[in-house]
Image (cartoon, rainbow, N blue to C red; front, side, top):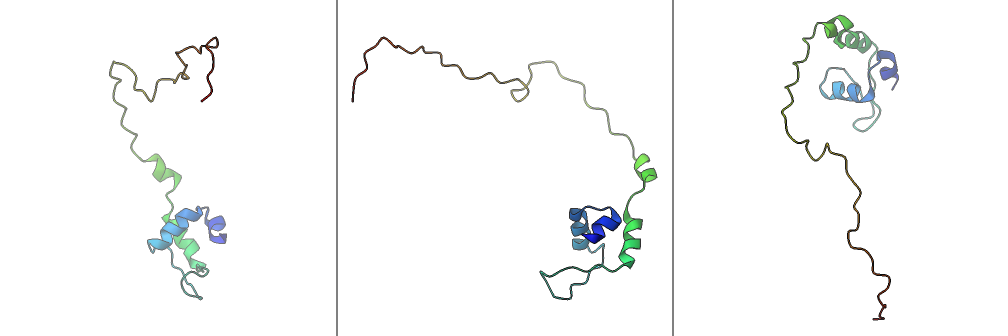
Length: 97
């Protein structure tokens, strides 16, 4: 978790980088024990992160397709609560079963 705080990467990203062998690790206790990451890995991860300039150079997303006329799909229409259409007959005598 210290590595995450120092690099600004999330824990899931660090785990993914470790699994992809992008970050060197050492486990002195064997599998399922704590993972040690060498200090020089900090310099390597700073080179792996894209900069703001690289993000700005990405091409813009393609414009969405025009809407097709017609009824809205069921998942977009608001739901109405179910109403019992048969009125209760309170005047009818109740029988015991």
